Amino acid sequence: MQENQPVEKTTAVVEAALQHHGTNRDELIPILNEINQQIGYLPAASLEKVSQALRIPKSQLFSSATFYRMLSITPRGRHVIQFCESAPCHVEGGRQVWHTILDELGILPGETSKDGRWTLETTSCLGICGVGPVLLVDEDIYGNVRPEQVAEILARYA
Image (cartoon, rainbow, N blue to C red; front, side, top):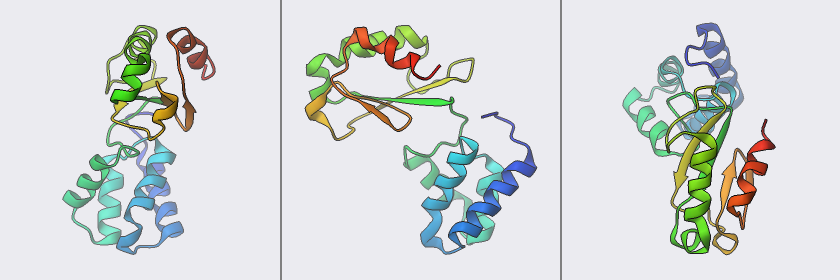
């Protein structure tokens, strides 16, 4: 999504999330997640509106928004790749897969490609060590990944 979302779109998305989940503080994460999914990240204006509606300090919203990996306060690419860098994945050839991903995308961890297509992140574990190396593209899990498979996997998201 675009870095400078129109205020009207942000307002509409926030209002829809609040209507869907209500204004109970217990609904904070589902509200933020819905906004993040609709816009692609959590613009400052959305955090301000949620802060007011739930009567939660902005600092607490910021803490939640930066703690959970599913949320982002900066724009992400259309597709988010999470690569597991745990020991089991590393032992099974993860280092070679990682270097292939870096070469294919031309970006570093935490970066988004200039065309806005990809964001690359690392994670300490995706919880499926038995099929390492593992990478997650959006919600799609790929296990037992080999370097020669990387280009084919990425091409699925063209």
